[in-house]
Length: 490
Ligand SMILES: Cc1cc2nc3c(=O)[nH]c(=O)nc-3n(C[C@H](O)[C@H](O)[C@H](O)COP(=O)(O)OP(=O)(O)OC[C@H]3O[C@@H](n4cnc5c(N)ncnc54)[C@H](O)[C@@H]3O)c2cc1C
Image (cartoon, rainbow, N blue to C red; front, side, top):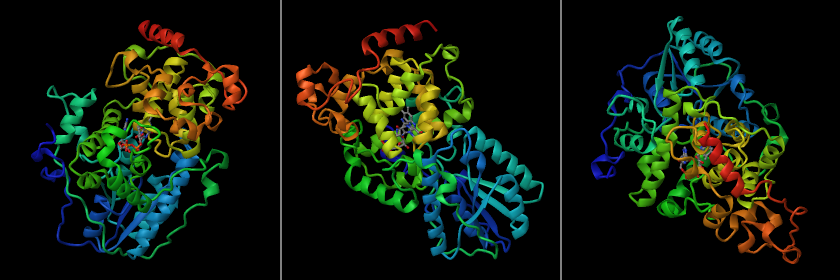
């Protein structure tokens, strides 16, 4: 119903509150465009506005040590970031500009650069994590005290004013479906055109750091996707051409691997979710995909309204006694649990820096329910490896699968049997055989529970349990009962 023609985001009237207003006069003082997680030139409202408001602009990226080496630092994401920046620099150079690069604290650098270049303003895309909000407030104050304007624009999310969506009672939503229905009906802004040309004032451009300065080789995935807006736009075109219309029926099929894999590009802002919306076909698959995009915005919304990612959203579970079991946690991280669906997904994460959503659900349920291990362990491990590792979306999803977050449901609904999940979502074994080669000769009927093979069968299928592939580290049936009891007793 929400996709009746007049409500489709693409045909809805623009959101005038966030429109790029053109004053008619261009400033002779430059404007700094501070790039953060918006590494693109297409549909970039801050960049487009700066190019209309000033004769010269200074596209800037600041390497902020607090992010690159902080709690959730990741070699995979740092490499991806460098690739995005190289591509962005290339696009800016092609238009006559460049990417100015600095390292240090943005508060200091922005004020220094603005003074050095006599910039009149700093434009940037708004961000919503607690860290970004407090940093941006500090920067805004610092710039104001030097009479420099700081202006935040939309672009990170499809709906610029998403944080203002409220229930009829005026509260933020805690449940996804009603949020999504409101979200789908919010008026959208117009897509911003990329600048034709860019003029940069005379200043030191600075160079991008070397890969080795930002990464540790052992923590890099060999088969990770490459970063950058060019890669992102190619991946989007391929998905729109080949897979979107079937998304509703294929998105859970781990072996088919037909989801968009756009999440890292969305995380780094190589793609604008608003621009993507305008390119979606009118099909059931596209509507199902668009709903997933709303989940992404929902978790930013949740983190904005409840900025305490370190603790459980549901008060009831804040004192949960999680199991301390280093050995099982390590087996989970290494993809050595003896459950093929879990192990395949965990190995995909290491190999590609990405994991299929169904895999994320299976391993999340296994860690928090079967093993009873604190969801924060899973959150941290994912943040180390995922190219799309994102404070809002990782935290929100981990809390969701651990049954302690928003959008609550009875615990048993998110307590998956890893064997039947494999039967259902990898029926021909493509996924397991790709990532767990020890099981490649094992027939489909044993691929969920290979320990059920007789000794003769293990020999025949080249897989001795306990030698080539581990025994299951836990009995799912018993673990399920314990998990239900653990949650019930809270
Ligand atoms: C435990 C767990 C941790 C997760 N951590 C992250 C994370 O750190 N970063 C991240 O972007 N996603 C995370 N997700 C959500 C989801 O798994 C990925 O967004 C999705 O698998 C990315 O693949 P895709 O681009 O092919 O998605 P598609 O299926 O093509 O979906 C399109 C887009 O919709 C968004 N989306 C889809 N599913 C979700 C979802 N459940 N929650 C939020 N957004 C969604 C993503 O931006 C995605 O790119 C997590 C899910 C789980 C269960």
